[in-house]
Image (cartoon, rainbow, N blue to C red; front, top):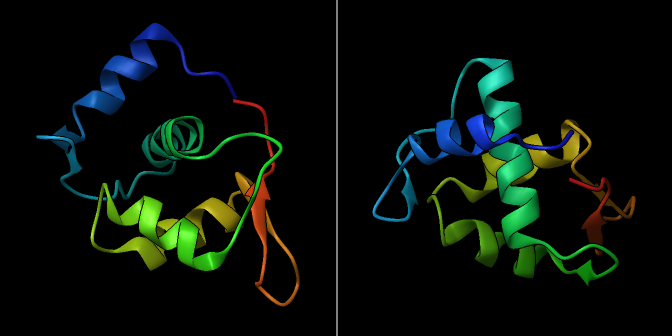
Length: 92
């Protein structure tokens, strides 16, 4: 799901001083955010530990576990069944 120039602009409104002010409740808005986070925080073709995912998400918001859950549940990140390895699932 590519982000358009408009989508990028809209996502920037969710941030203040580089930090996410709130996780959007509306699914469409949240999908824009998740696409942005996937593209900006995680490299395609690279494996990440849960700790690395958490640390990356903490750079933008304190509720890293909710963001991680949304990323996995919505198909932006995939994880090994035991949760030991995560990777970017989609091309943004």
